[in-house]
Length: 163
Image 1 (cartoon, rainbow, N blue to C red):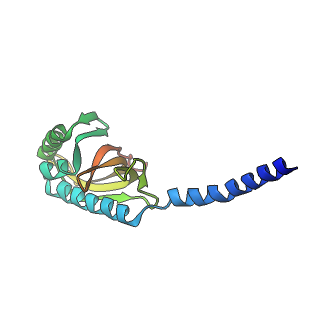
Image 2: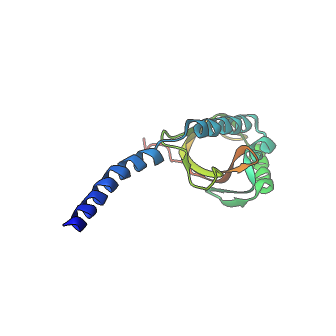
Image 3: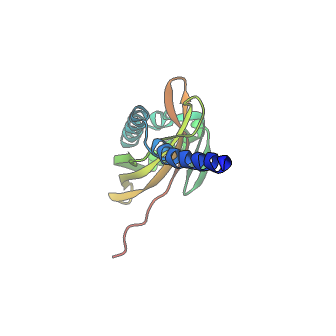
């Protein structure tokens, strides 16, 4: 009889603990969220200014960028990638929004987290545009010193709605 009581009590304790744990992991830390919002402001400004160096500075040294053309490895390669893009396309009104549930802590000692959201921009090329574009992104962030940067970024472009 005592064993059943202990098991029932343990089950009851777990049933109360799990919802509390789930709420804690689904609630982003306001300070971490602000760090990501500030990083995205720098990122958006770099896009709008066509500044590949400032854009690359938002990434860790060992970062990986994965997009529709494939992976780009390292901050230097990311800077070159965007320098090439900026020679052909001008961006304006670039906005990367973080979804309401991001970021999530995934590492130890507050050194890594991930977030996801939507992005939108206006593109103007030499022979096209302006064109509105949008899509989704997900990223893993890491610290370099006291600064949060993108360690892994993936993004896509969603097609415009059918007419």
